[in-house]
Image 1 (tube, protein in one colour):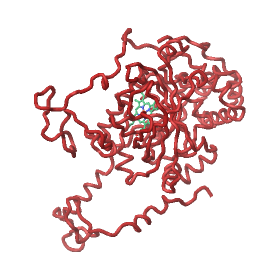
Image 2: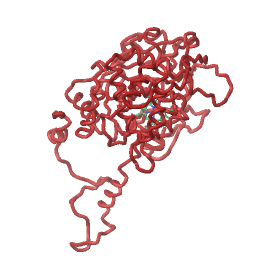
Image 3: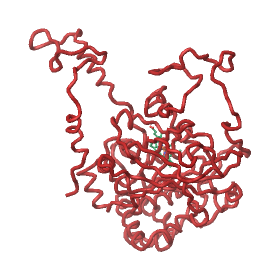
Image 4: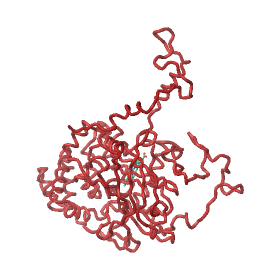
Length: 517
Ligand code: HEM
């Protein structure tokens, strides 16, 4: 039996125990005397427009949905706390890292390609988005459960996503599209290998690590900077689901991960993660054999050991899914002083895309919705010269001056050195710089030969074959195996054998392209 009853099965019964029935009203507060019949002319109809309680109700219902997220549409989340357990003042001035500081947070976990009602136990990266309500505004760390990504240029992101979503005519998922994209973009090798390894189907959200994946900049109070990657390691231990069981669960318990998270928290088995960073100095970054801002690459943990910075615990389920999880709007551009973006092209593309989609998905005033509002932290007061817009439901800055600079005590900047962004020296040719062959195979080779053991390699091959053989275009299969053959001869040969094709020639000889940035 795959399903055990948990607190989520009794939520509605628990509600009854703690609530008394109250007078039913319309949205505008009028008490109602009847809620099961519309007003009609005679017992058989027709209806009257004057039945506004009915009209209001159906109009409101007709508008219940907001657009689902264009990616990461299916997800679940919870509130909790981040505690800075270790001193980080030597490299970062952000108050959230001051040792001993506790910061309230929201986490939303998700799958990527499926729609809002899709199954949780599919092979797909998992989103790992964290929103911290810090004393210096919102910090959104919008990561995944994988340290790398499929592409390294943001112009390719939309194309990659289209290949993972539905076929435009059949409206079906299409293995020909998925693997054709891969065959045409060998830069995706590292991430595809991670995805088709055992980690590609984590057991719920509690048993996986999270990663910033991107390199970020940290700045201290002396205005010195370093580059960092965040690693958020599960204290529950890594646990994955066997692919056969995952397929059964996808049918029988499609909301497996949501239920698992909700029930663990309801039973007070609070999941936690330990936060670490890898620190790379500017000098080290310049001497790396690869671009430190390439999202398809990891930093070696031997060379750049994990440094512990804190602990995150999830201890509070949302009271209302729509208000607090569906409307949550995470943006990688939201960072407090001391944490900044790196030049990573993918990150730079994301800095624009998230707020843009929020203006469409949630609305102009999405930052006023309580779950997104920086003033959730009582130490934060938002003082801007932004005004009005649809659904302005807060103070709208009252009578404060609406233009800057003014002579009437409107909000002004203070403490320039403390708050101003770190100055960067950027120079170079503004052009479309080609990077598709930027060392696609060295790190995947390490993954195949050193990170995976015999069992892991066998699973990787089986999982790829299981999906790849669904391609009806046999040429795609050959081209995909030819890309994987660049990683390791054994890998290419075993894939070819299982797929009953000739061992393909390698497509690339590039192993270790030096790319100074
Ligand atoms: C969600 C764009 C790459 C993690 C989204 C959304 C967009 C988007 C438009 C929907 C947001 C919403 O409706 O609130 C992009 C673009 C990318 C990119 C343009 C590359 C250029 C990445 C990468 C990661 C990532 C590399 C992880 C390292 C997430 C997560 C969510 C998300 C976790 C869900 C956030 C939530 O739970 O609300 N992305 N994305 N994305 N993305 Fe990306």
